[in-house]
Amino acid sequence: MTRGMTVLATLVVVVATSSGPVLAETMALKLLPNYSRATFKSDAPLETFVGNTAADGVAGTLTVDPGRPQAASGTVKVDMNLVRTGVDKRDADMRGKNFLDTEVEANRWVTFEMKSVEIAGPLEPGKTIPAKVRGILTVKQKPVERTADATVTWIKLTPEQLESQKRFGFTVDNIKVRARLATTFTDHGMQVPQQLFFKVSNDIQLETDLIFVRQ
Image (tube, rainbow, N blue to C red; front, side):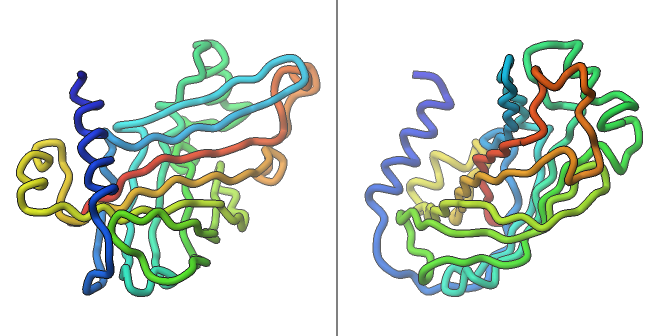
């Protein structure tokens, strides 16, 4: 079993065995990049492709009181210079001056700034709860309001569990967030070239699978 599989298997056990309310307090967390990823999907008439990034390509912070998760705040950033779709030329064209223009530092990062969370009740260790996360999605310096469909899981480690997991970067309190949202290139001031209409969709599906650990 690989290291990654071992870690994930251990976390599954933790989720399965943790239950019940826990005294909550506001927690400041940071994204654990080695166990987080972000993707975008273009589904055009003649071609579907997915861009992926992880590790150094994604960063973020989260502040949340598990007893009042509706008041959570946070930011996630994706480095578009590190997104890969599997075709080098397509990646270069995407980052070029005619599209994202990521040589400009302000264009390099796609960001999502959380503004509010709609979620039923408090977080409980080991329980996955659906949520709607409203925020500002910024692509190429063009911000738009978006709502992501998400699930949130609070993974709380015992001292014994922490001892075996801390070398991977996990802490006593860990929050796993999976989210999905949609946007369009035109909403962010970009136009898909006419000659690429059948190969690049104006609609973009964004997905994240993120682990935040308490600082």
